[in-house]
Length: 334
Ligand SMILES: [Fe+2]
Image (cartoon, rainbow, N blue to C red):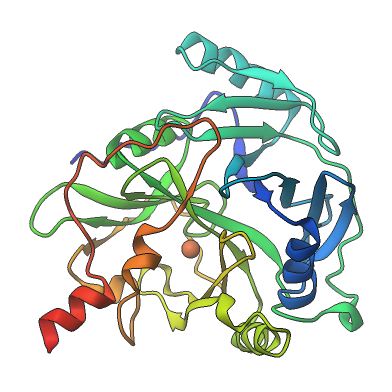
């Protein structure tokens, strides 16, 4: 393993995870799930697309659903940069290094840059987006899980080391990581640009594939109410895992599967990770408390089922290191 030294002065300023573009077989079903069950607000909808945002998001969208047939896909993962100048510098930076980058036009977004990262994830960067009123203090409109803002995404990749090397050069810093027991091989890395523990997580597996997206909620009551709302609205089977508490980042969590199967996490706050001398926390892969401090490990399906990215071939992981699943745990203990 080598843990790269993060670049304190990257050529351009990526600020945070911003938005995702996902497929939807049926926009009305998708809308019912995100709007009525989870409590998102719809910014716009037309025949081909649905745009939603969380309660504190004062901009047009953090999730975009594109009507499409066939298996579910993630079309793009979006980051914000600070200014359009950052985008222009990044355009040159990526092209000089052999990553074909191009400017595109996207509805409700300013200058937008497309490029694939080193492990094949199709990325989208923008610095500006149409503004919308935040609904944070429209308390009478809060319901479901009361999702606040998009916080992070987790991606399965065939090469965790390549991912962390590439993102470290762009200024991302690692806050926590999992290594295979007694070795220096990286199994998972929690990387961040904003001041909390993560913007993007890369974990070992067939990839690239989107494992989940995660929205911050303000309290555990919102997590419980989202599950209750799912139950009473006919979406009980959408609750996949939890509630529980992660060892990594200390967050209380619940996971849902939306009508297409995209995995959505609602979770309470993690912690601040700002100082330059912050030391990343190591977890051993066999330590099941890294994924849940109490309760049983997640199922095999939770660990291994994920959403492919459009146009990105899926590669087998370089590291043969399966995690402890519920099925494996039960085998070992009965
Ligand atoms: Fe997460």
